[in-house]
Length: 212
Image: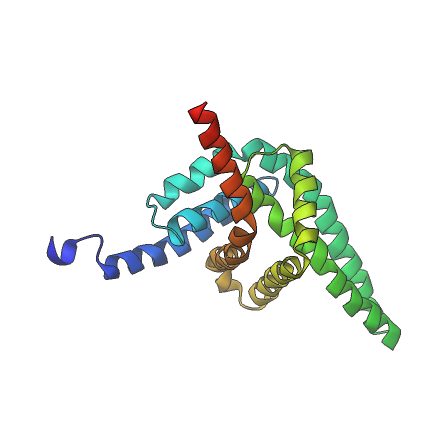
């Protein structure tokens, strides 16, 4: 097939670049109703793992299939997450105003920023876990909290990556068209290591069930 072989490195790299842009746009479009932010994030994470980090093609199909599969639980979980996120942003705004009043206010503000990395990190587990495992809302929340606390240093790093991405995009708006995929990719480097024992156990259970 020569230069028109779709498996050539040039075409594979071009395909990855196009996927990065389109998947970010898909995520933005599917997140616009806000309540669908969860299933859109689950779909983005799953597609990044399977198609960008893996060798599976048809990234558009994988994205929308995962989005539909996780729509109900994802929306309900998003409805739980949104009030928490709003509360964190509100408290941050109030404490930031206190930095202009006194030095103690500045200390409290930065202490809050450090503390907030934990709930942010827990939130970053939710939809990747949903994309890889089957849970109802309560089970998803409980198990993600357990995972986050059991892997606390990684949880803080995951939260820091997310926070840094938000700050960067607030300065360079154009990066919103690539940043969702970049964040999902970086998170997957950590989360897939955490998920591996559970995925292996799940596969072993499925194989045992098939052989019985």
